[in-house]
Structure formats: C-alpha cells, structure tokens
Image 1: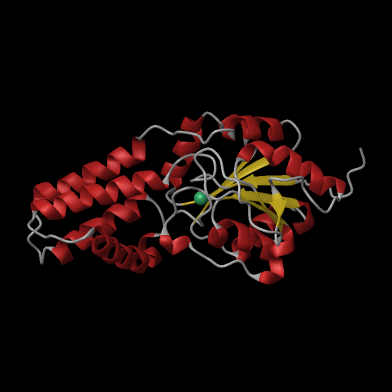
Image 2: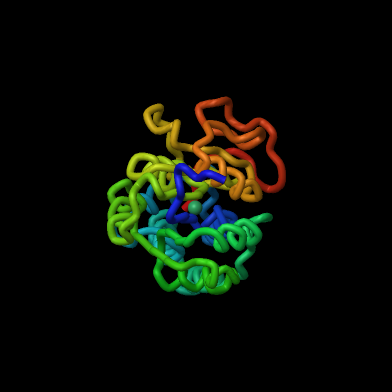
Length: 271
Ligand SMILES: [Mg+2]
C-alpha cells in the first residue's frame, strides 16, 4: 500500500483520552460541598463550582494543573467561603482527598488498550500530558500501557509553542506528527496550529475551563471520533493521503458526529 503521508510520531493525551480523570475531580467537588455543609455554609452546586473555578484558574500560574493544585485551591476556597472558620480537621480531610486522588485506580476507556497496542506495533508512540510530574508518570505506569510508549512528555501547559518545541527536540516534521486528545483547547487546536494532524475524541465529562470553539482555519487538519477503536483506520487514511474516513468517524468540517456510543459523548476538554 502506498503511504504518501507517513506519520513518524503518534502522541496521545492521557487524562480523559486514555483513562478516566475528570470524574475524580467531580467527586472531589462533591466532597468539598459536604465540607462546606458541615461548616454551616449552604451554597448550591453551581455557586460552589463558580467559587472553586475562580480560585483554581487564578492559581494555575502558581501551581499549574493537577491534583495538588486542585486541592490547594479547595483549601483556599474553604478558607474564603467559611470566612476562616474551616477547621484543621476539615482541611485534613482535603489533604486526605488529594492522597486518594493521587493513588486511585486507573481505569482505561473502552478500546484504549487495544488502540495503543495496535499503533505501538507500527509507530513510535509518545504520551503528552500536563500536570504533576510524579502523578502523571505514576498514572502511566499503573495504566499498564508504559511499555507501549517510547516517549513521555509531562508539560506545564499545552500550547502551540510547547508542541513545536517537542517536535523540534525529537526532530519530527510537523506534517509527520499526529496527536489524539479529548480537549479542543489543550490538545486538538494547538496541535493543528503547530503541527499537522489531530484526532479529537471528546470525553463525557469536561472542565469548563477547557472549553474552546473550533477555529475555522485549522478544521481541515482535525478528525473527530466518538471512541478510540477506529484510530488505526483514521491513521491509515491519513497515510494513504485519502480525503475522508468512512462514517461514523469523520473529518471536520463535515457535520459533527451524531451517533454516540459507549461512555463518551461530545463535550470539550478536561483538566
Ligand atoms: Mg485530557
């Protein structure tokens, strides 16, 4: 088979692309709501979300992304929302929460293992993830997928410049690079801007901070899938230089996937 557009490096995002992540943060927010309840602060889920989001986003420049940043933000929000009445025992509960989140079992999405294993046989794979170095590398080890990835990059932010730097360091031409991710803002759009091919696999749960609108100038470099099992087919299509992938996976800007199965459904982003 002629491969006009050979892909030399395939990268995956980890959180909410290969394994569940956001649901753990949702559970953490529910626990935070109970803490506030115990402290006599009655707020709706929406009010708590808004307060926590504000602190979290303001703290990204200090702590970056990840569980440690999240829990420090919860502690700060707890102090603010209780006007300093939060107790040491309640703060200890949040510290305990962070340790649970950092060590909880990794659950892969359906099809993740098969897709990674299949692609590792034909292409070098790289994991590109943002967050705490120790936690992200630990999750990869515990996922059982470590052996399939030749390279691992844990970054503080995922911007077009960061992706360009990674490609330059590994001496991969932009046209020969493809990334699969769940976040339009962190994975798909900056890769399409910096490199070439991006596959968007939306996750059911997403953090509002990661929302982004699809810019029209890079749509032609982006494929959309509802699950990981059709990845090898998409990559073969790209390498053959074909213009389209058979339904239900499709290349934007054709209509967005309507049929959704499994535990994934459209929605942008994750932490
Ligand atoms: Mg992600």
